[in-house]
Amino acid sequence: MRGPHTQLWPAAGHQQPRPTHKQRWLLRSDQAYDPNLPSMVLTKEDLLAHSRYIRDTLAPRIAKGNNPVSGKDAFDLTNLRSALEELHKSPVTLEILSFSRIEKALQKIVEAHGGDWPPDIVTKAKDLIARWDESFGLQRVRTDLWGQGGPLEDFAQPGGWFRKGHTALPSAENPARELEVKCNLGRAHQDGHSDFNIGDWWLNSAAACRDGIVDNPFYRISSDEDVAYAIAMTQQMETNVANDGSCSYTPLSTDPGVFKLMATINGGQRTSVRVLRSWRLQSPLAPVGGIRYDGLYRVTSYGVKLSYNPATDSDVWHYTFHLQREPGQDSLEKALCHPSSDQLDDWEDYREDMWEGILAQDQEPPVLGFEGKQRLQSIDSGYFSPNPAEQGVLKS
Image 1 (cartoon, rainbow, N blue to C red):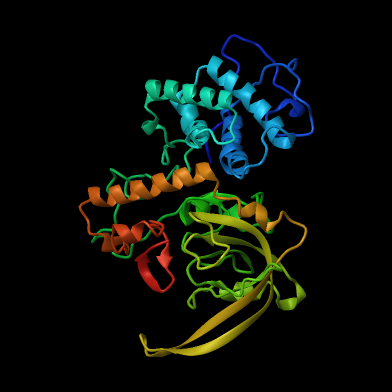
Image 2: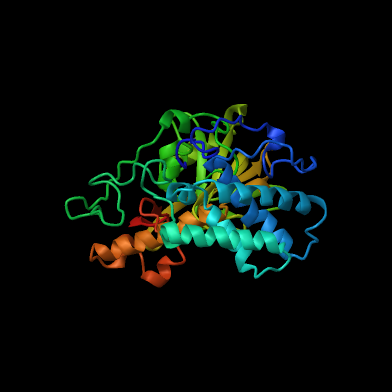
């Protein structure tokens, strides 16, 4: 969630109609460039889309040595020139840069040291970067993660969430670490996609819970008294990943939702469930950061195994569900494009803020289940979600 839609172009007082879909930059490649088209009208949302396109698609394609003066690259570069001209003529604020990360896209062009980028585009990118650095200091450009419209909005309330500069660690008065997570249960307990898109991404499971794609931040099965609606996988919960979209899912043995997940195939009434994957999931499909929605899966069968747990000196039931991705929805490749470059910017800021926040509280990292900064750099700070192997230890 990145805040309300606000128009950036044109400047105040200059009336100009928004371009049609065919005139929008980088959205179509089958239309020849027409210099007589009206000037671009770009919003910060447009700039975000363009920044992603440059960083995640256009720059890697040109870096592969493709001829940028012909085909789709030529069309994209022609439109990129037009966009850079508009950026040169129009005022840009720190808020716009923080939202769109367009400066990161231009830095990508400059850092290529020319390469196959046309020299005029490199020069214009350098000029804009220098101007913005002088005006704002580009080291200040970052998303306000906990601010209005930020990905962790609502997570900095007194006594609630831990964040840099706020005291909200579990205390002696709250040894159980009871966390009140705002959750849209009405949305979380809807069948199907529930208006979410494949590839939707969050910094942590609590943010996913807040938005209502799951009903808890602890990687338990999301369910009501009748049936399951969603599962979020982390650590060793997924195995047997196959090219046909099937996999095996092993929830926590103490998860009460296992019986509701069984109900999705019992009684002859099969129901799909939403599947999310955390970056800590030991799977080739895990995102490199955060937690991502990968689409609808159907439970095709399940198995139960009884094993002895020496730690508790008791037998434990383990459930394994075999899942098959539903046909007729967006491909998994679409999901695998996330987190995008700008989302990874937020991810890195999030990890940095969380570590600095822990140090600011003068607390030892093990309080949150962390083994030190080196370990934190390879795991999500995920302060809301218990390790499935260690109930009560807060990890993602």
